[in-house]
Length: 320
Image: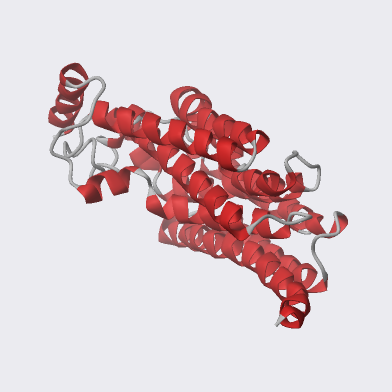
């Protein structure tokens, strides 16, 4: 089955290297955008817009958020175009539109390129070119640096490539301020440090999948025990990193309490992964950490959002 899918992908590249007009349904092109990943990007970018100093007109904020979302979707489409061969091998990704033959590789490439171009130009023309430049760099970093280079060449792929997923709140922040501020790096740092333990937890219980596809994830290269040790180190480092917004003055006591509790809980789950090394218990621990890591990131950024909403409430009510 894998050989057949790979042959179909190659035929698609030769038959339609660049263009649209195939048989892909709307839901297939929607799937190319990686909507679950895109939803997290939208949320973290929204937080960047809200917590940035100053302000932005609501319509411009919505346009900025839309452009960031489209840019994230473009990155996903370009990733699925390039990774179609290994996606066809892995059980987790074999049903994606390109390896399943529902969308031709050339269509995915064209779709991604058009979305990338449109998102960057729209953000530059309507909001500011600093944010647009950062969005362009984010798309390039994910599609080229991570997808085309790091992912298949080094077990540090997630460590370095994680920067791509950490840029969206900075893009949102820059859409408001027009500059790349040091304070916005704290939002970047939270996601950057979160990414390796999140994906390494997945790789621990999906290592056979990655092995078949030839993707050098940390468990397959350094071993499961070393991966567990690294997960624990990153989880412990995340405690001060999660609290870093306090140092820059755009987070208060509510965030401090929640951030500390959430990051310590993250470290506890990481310790369980480190301690449970055999059989089904090891897989369960990794799956629990993977699941909690998603809750953690949402909760951390949601707390920032809620805290700023509470702070802004008196001024909003006074206008009424």
